[in-house]
Image (cartoon, rainbow, N blue to C red; front, side, top):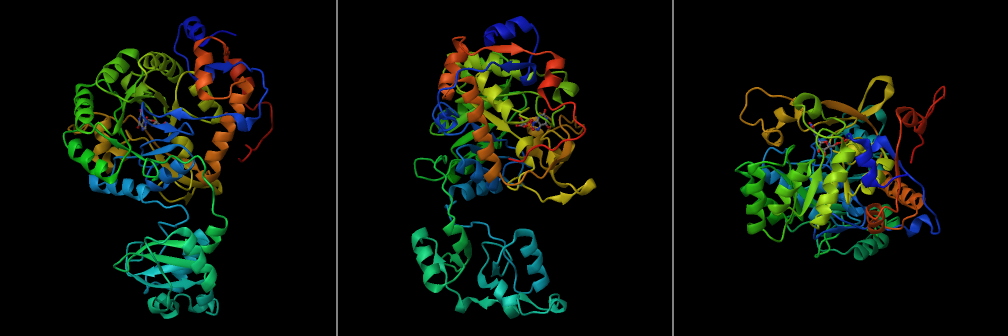
Length: 502
Ligand code: XMP
């Protein structure tokens, strides 16, 4: 094997994750001893090196909450109708309270039992709050449970209104916003109830507590919390003039880190914005990018970046390299930029091209402190958008590049990322696609984390710090692999196979 330095020198070409393997090391510790603690930025530490990408088919509050619960962080995308909508997503993450269902499916009193059955079959809920708007935030009017509709004959589902069968507000026991989980549990136990709606002083529904959830109340020992004990969250901004006002809203909502979202970070707009951000809001960490060369990295670090996001054209939905003729293979970009940024004390994010857990380990091995994922998370329950059935009975979700025509037409912020705002002729740098249902991130993220720990154990290292030190001092060895070796490294020579579920 060779050192990472030698590998890149020897290849004399651009490399990416698939071009090499890492040599195994000596194992004298269990998988659970591997510590994945890392730096997101100069000031923010995470227990898991995982970030969800600020894309409108990947990260809104639900994804961000789940990422933070599992020790990573989500970056809320900027493609909302207004900056206030984006700030509202940040606030939802900040207000998240473990054990509270913050966004319960609700129903309106004039909806029918058939509508309730549709909710039940989709989400499997047994108690649904009834509000005037049919949404959380509306006035609480009642609660409808299976017990209330069990006796109704199926042929009457369509003609029976929820208002006729629900338990009305005056007979409901509710909790206030300030209620602690332990008190909620006592109320539910004492009253032998399954669901406790939580209301604010205007009697508007703000959350729901379920007894079954409390019983199996999950433990998230590695969650990413801020100093106030709230989950951490990031938000993307662009380099437009109006971003100053957006930043103010995001900061007021409590955002921990801002990501300047640009396909090519080496611009005067970004330098100006970084300088303004660091002088106006020194308490907020700023991730700049994207970059793929040391020169770009130097420009943004000099301007005040607290971390850099690396990648140009390496994402699964990206066509930048084909359309713009510009970019860099992700392995080379990560290695070269990370090495330089390390010398300046700035952590880097390997953004794009992560296809499975082994790719994460390789990205970290090339010097990244965290990885950012789009496609890998886009088919999960927590990604925005509804599932739909595709051909062959596959359950799918939409995933689109932020530089796709689709995303750019949806909102102009996406155009800013690709410098096409004021241009009637749009040149797409991404495609629109579908992803297979991947299930919930509550299973997928622990799988990624455990997978990384196994990879680290195989390499013989116990922590990310140790990994980086041993890559840079040459202890960890790499080897390039031929195209045939790449084929051999994947599944081959089978009639058919099924990929194991995590
Ligand atoms: P993955 O491979 O995780 O990549 O799906 C996600 C990353 O891709 C970038 N991105 C784009 N790049 N055109 C591009 O060239 C696009 O339309 C586009 N949309 C997203 C982005 O860095 C993201 O994190």
